Image (cartoon, rainbow over all chains, first blue to last red; front, side, top):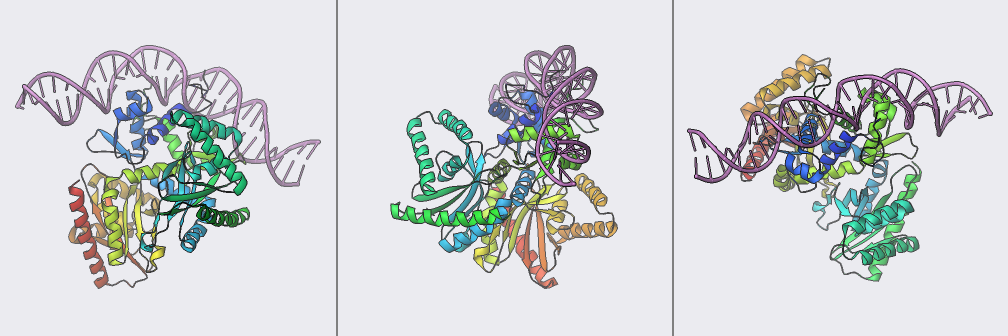
Length: 258
Length: 258
DNA sequence: CCGCCGTTTCCACTGAGTGGAATTAGGGGG
DNA sequence: CCCCCTAATTCCACTCAGTGGAAACGGCGG
């Protein structure tokens, strides 16, 4: 009768698969193990269903069950799939080395990110440190879209309709300060249209600027540069912005010749 | 009638979810995009089923569809889940910093891995380089279990039954040289029992030693140390093995006090 | 403009999946 | 040491979500 049709007011899709993915998603950064009860609570799924789906995920190698028999954790498979994503990404392959070089040359942090729902996810984050040995690369880390230069650059790069969709979700998330926040987001988008980059100091004493990378047939990416332990000034912001736009232009050139 | 029962001679599980995961797995490292046809071929699933499941994976944010409309690639979500796995891992959290320190102190590569089916997956791989700026950390990379010191250390750490299961799969994979390979694997396992580590030169001019880390309630891990561009000698192997066993002991001590 | 090949949609069928209820297992306290 | 309490798992009848072969579609090359 129902041909894999809308089951809960959504578009076509496979319910069990969607639910299984939602279970994987319930393991947020910092979470070690989750029991079926906690998963059921977080996802809103019936406990028996969760029990069956977690079993399946264990069989498929996506979850490890803790010998205690009562909880699960993400298995190593998920990082190998993540690795496949990174090595398959033509954008990261093309500009990753350039980012590393730029970070060393300019002595600042360089990052590349894209969106996962309402968060920005780093494909690569090169943290510059004077103690070069500590130079660190983190992939997969999430930062909120609406509060970061990365996120605002992304918003500026996507289609109008999609952007409005996301702005609505931010409203739902941040009950207070909504109006001020949205105004600020729109200001950043104007800045991007005007200057080609936007600047946000999300974390204290960190100055970050970002710009979108829009390519046919690929998701919108955002490229950022940042400096830690600095005092924010217009001169510094402008300088950083100039570095970023120049670097982004070089990246786009390379990417165009794919 | 069938209560989520064995559908293809397997144990209980959810078929659609299993298939969806299999589709994600079809994206191996280095693969950029896959079309539904290619996925159907790789997974052996009917094309219409693949079409529906890929749609679901797009809706769930695990796949991005290429604007060409004909292919998919892994979405950024997979690395954010991968990141969650790494930050949630108590073992990596505990000994990751120790590994970095050890790599710097001994001037060699240090890695931590565990199994994904018949491959070993690095949770962390710290590559030492005299040019410290190039020090690189890769997570998620896979190496074959049967050919590496990491894999053999893992095999030595797991239960007998599980090991025999895996050895059977190696036979299936490597048609030729099977007997010699299995003998070699068993020799490594003996070495582990005797010396606490095993040495394998899988790649030319790389000497690697590894040892298992077995903890209650956690998967078996393997810790390795390696040196590039060296000539293999017993003296060097012994030295490396001594460093490794000492370091592993320190790690186990820390991990015991969790 | 017209085939051609791969992808998506359609559709009738049915067994895979569901979730509330019953059962089992664990672990904490008396 | 055993019993209770809590949480996970299994059971089961029901039914609709999922299936896959076939038909329709659509983009691309000629």
